[in-house]
Image (cartoon, rainbow, N blue to C red; front, side, top):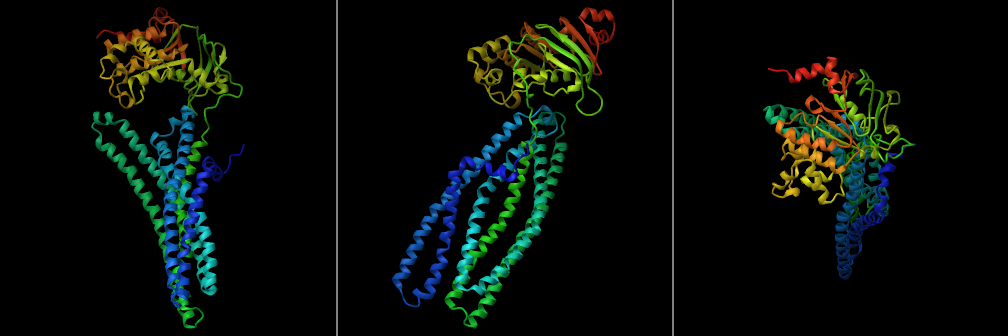
Length: 578
């Protein structure tokens, strides 16, 4: 189905705010109309009230103008406050839509896009869209109306002078069109370079501990400086184009005034205009020129806002991780797993997995071992469909059902994952455990923590389960974070479990505690265990040795040792005597 144009997509965000937007436009229009009263009254005074000494009329006119200006005071407040509210609400809706869309994008998208660049589209890009959403329609409406009304009014004063002014408008338009393309390209480049800076900042701050550990402060500063130089260069080009644009526009409007001054002087000398009308024309001509300048100045805002919305739309158009049309819910999971001739590659080139076939009975433990890069983690990523398995890549089945025919949510609800690199969210330790079951009671959370051997430690913290653990759980040790992640899975209570090197980075004492928790977690669940420490998987129901994307050996620990193949070699290397 053809996507609607960018303009229609942008306008659709006004619909929930139609009433407030209409009131804002009405108020802005009244402000402009009230602005026409002053030059009209000025002309009347110069031509009538002052020559005829109509002091009462002078006073009444002044009071009327004052009352209109007081009304304009409140209208200006309304436009500035509620008008911006329209833009902010639209920005908020776009941000929510974009964030929700990001949550639905596949793993592969985040493999190829930096977090900082994505954040730029959620923040600064959408701020520019917000400004365009408020000021753009307002300037177009009021500017357009004022140009028409002021033109008509100036024609009533002196049509010849008015046409002289109007004849300069095409020059303004031609200059605007000429510089518009330059500004568009320059400001697009500036946005891209801004995203580079945000990406560098996000990466450096996230890895600040590594930076300090390697004393690479100067390296990070230089990386940031390079991004900053790109931003400065792009900004220089953008502002050069903008400077050319506005200085040219300003010069042309200044020439307007010169033409009016000279032509008006000749008309006054030739007695084709009265002194009062000439004075009123000089005062009133800004009614015509100012909105034209405003309309042309809106081009800069349009460039920023349109560029930001275009980048927003590009991200919104990224294909989501959609379920198959005939996908069904995975329910009453027994936990039988089958990998049938699974072949997979991330990019074109060498296959990461080649015709891998494995079977795991419900409630059994399959251990995956072998050299790094052999494809063990890829198998773990394919089971919950983090990466889609192509049709020609074999099949992965749970309880006899091809995972491609299952809804992603029901599939992943049935699978719990404990990884070596644990990710914890900023917040309390209780909130991070509750992530496994958002509606869990406090009793359920504490029960999960006890089974993960972390409850007693939590009670020693100043605020117990409400203790804040910092960004990515920085206030916890590696073992503590690991046990929190295990508690999270206990709370989720899945039928299938994936342990991806869950104890490989721990000291011996902590490993014992965590291994006890993992053994408890695996009990009664179908488990897929990736391990480098072979001592942790000796009791597995089956061990598969994966090397260069293929299963080269499989069997129980004793059987594989007896074969004297790759597994025995790995085992001997790991437990050899010094």
